[in-house]
Figure 1 (cartoon, rainbow, N blue to C red):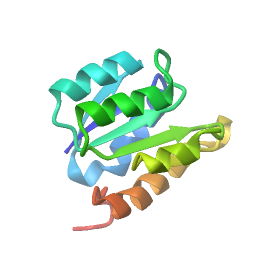
Figure 2 (figure 1 turned 60 degrees about the vertical axis):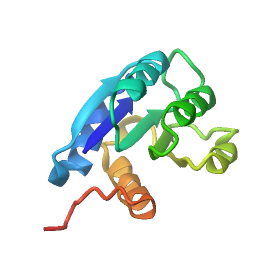
Figure 3 (figure 1 turned 180 degrees about the horizontal axis):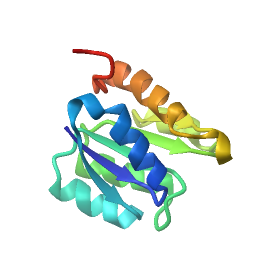
Figure 4 (figure 1 turned 120 degrees about the vertical axis):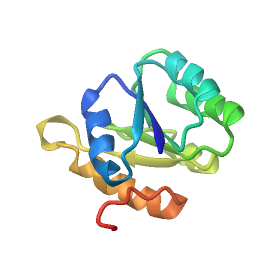
Length: 130
């Protein structure tokens, strides 16, 4: 399993690694919108985890570009602040979650979101399965 994580927040990559630990994922960490677009072109990704606050390109622009480059890859868009355009994401087939911000967030919210989204999108974390 290969996961692209687009965020400057390393806690996001760590949480994704823990959530998919049973599947031993290969993670590619991108720190900007342009980096994730370049990675989508050359990596056969199974999932893109996209921090909507990643610098460079707007979240919706990144999602549209990813859809053009890799139309079938599942995308999980995350934010620590509610996005005004979150409803538009669902029309693009993107799963969206707002995570708690600050010290309360230790990755559990992301792991729960990944498990929930994975079940719906066929990208199971494998947690708890043998």
